[in-house]
Amino acid sequence: MDDLTRPLHDRFGFSAFRPGQEQVIRAVLARRDTLAVMPTGQGKSLCYQLPATLLPGLTVVVSPLIALMQDQVEALRRRGIQAAAFHSGLSEHERDRVIQSLRLQQLKLLYLAPERMQHDAFLRLLKSCLVSLLVVDEAHCVSQWGHDFRPDYLKIGRLREELRTPPCLALTATATRRVQDDCCDRLRLHDPLRLVMGFRRRNLALSVRPCRSRAEKLSELVRLVDASPEGTIVVYCATRRAVEEAAGYLSQSRRHVGFYHAGLSDEERRLVHENFQRGAVRILLATNAFGMGIDKPDVRLVVHFDVPGSVEAYYQEAGRAGRDGRPASCVLLFHERDLGTQEYFIQQAATDGGGSERADRMRTLLQDMIAYVLGQSCRQLAILEYFNDDQELAEGRCGLCDRCLASSSTNHTVFRSGPQTSARALLETVSWCGGRFGVGRVVDIVRGSRSKELLSYGADRSPAYGSARTESKTAVTRTLRQLIDEGYLRVEGSEYPTIGLTKKGVDALAREESVTISSQSRMAHGQAEQSYTPQRPLQTAPIMDPVLFERLRRLRTELAAEEGVAPFVIFHDKTLRLIAHQKPSTRAALLEIPGIGETKVERFGRRVLEVVNGDG
Ligand code: ADP
Ligand code: ZN
Image 1 (cartoon, protein in one colour):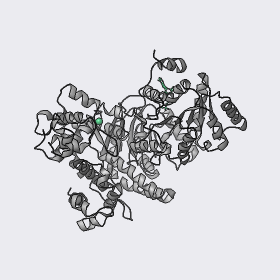
Image 2: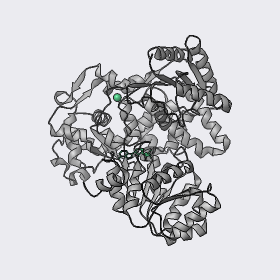
Image 3: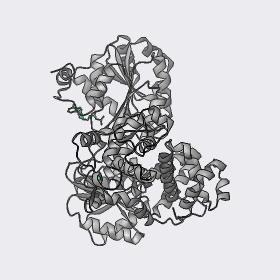
Image 4: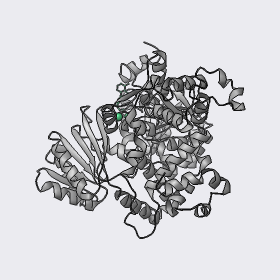
């Protein structure tokens, strides 16, 4: 047994670390700031509880979940580790006891509710202790991009300074790249280790079914329910009305149907919950009000009757399927009218005091959701990419989702001998670049660019330099994107994204195998989009067209790749949103949009207009 397995075994009774734990613990013990994103149940607590027993002095854990603190403290005490919790729910006597044990330096761990941080006397006391580690649990609460922002969390940065900047470990179960960046900034993490992992769900078959009407959605729902005779089914709808409508429709011919939404009385909700838990309700229709605390292992099917507002929400809800590890399906029914409902929620949130910033953030989250719906690559990979779970990305496609199934039923093209750019040449080039460049430069090298800058890096000596000289930039870029989609390559960093090999890519190179890319998904982009011709949603005020916005974003990605710059250099989100809102159809109208000057119109105007006018 090594230095860490011994205490893991002796103190906690576990024989081995779960994935990620050891890496985080070693970083923490080496005093490195760390951000760890792991799904619920993966074992985040151990990542600080074990170090707390090995470090001198005190580990302070900021956590908003007072109810859970007490459990944790008791479990630690049973293991002979001195721990306490400090929050507003304590009696005076209990509070005194905590203060006393802090004074006597008896504690190894102190759980602290965020609202307790700013009490001066308490801060002074903490300052007099040796704090070796500051842990921020539920760290996404510090980000306005998260789904659970808490203003109190903004004070953690100051607390940390007051405590003479101990190393900081930030933990959360959900954080997109944006939220991760925000956590690092706001908690002032210094050169942090970022570890994101465990988001792949191998037993879930994810799919999206485009529907042309509400009636089509209802009949699709019936079909799905009938095809799933075993286990429990959960159907998520966006509104109470939709819940009741769909429940009414299903219960005409099926038994054991129940529904749940915030409009029911407490008593009614309790009853539904109970019936669901004990199996008397087999098919449950619910709004997102249903979920917290449900942990039914045998859910075989989760249907999203309406598109949810974010990928986080979607994956959290879909993820309730197949907790027992057996195969389960998650189907999202997509009718673009639903976007009107979401837009309504967004405007509602803005007028409910969230302001336009809140609305903007919600809109961005919704756009990511639409990108998922319209996406052409493996659904599981799309989710992993969304959460930046590089480790799991490297494992490649899921083979279960609608995209994987569609591509496996069509021919695969072996790129090595084909007329297109050799996938191998691209992998070799990326490997040669060693993480220095983004998509644009890699493409330039394969196409034999004579740019001074690239030549100064010795690009002409790279193994596949110029091997795609006869091909267009767009074609080569497309192949490269495909390699990213299929998990051979990955993009790193958000401001100046660079490109690197995944483990799958390294393996493919090492084995000298031919790299195959499905021909279907290579051409699929244009095809699929045509089935979603945007209609104006049911709103009186003109609103932004989210489908158009998504297309513009895609164009921006292309342009950015061609220019070898970051997307925001081409256009800001705000600008794209204005275009999607005003739909300028001529160059002159385009010039009216703030953020677009002569130069941009000159360079990109034609292609933007093609997209707006629907022929791009
Ligand atoms: P999270 O905070 O990520 O939701 P917890 O820290 O509550 O997860 O841990 C979930 C469960 O996993 C707990 O019951 C914990 O005891 C257990 N656990 C954690 N690490 C290990 C391990 N290395 N081996 C076995 N069980 C573990
Ligand atoms: Zn897949």
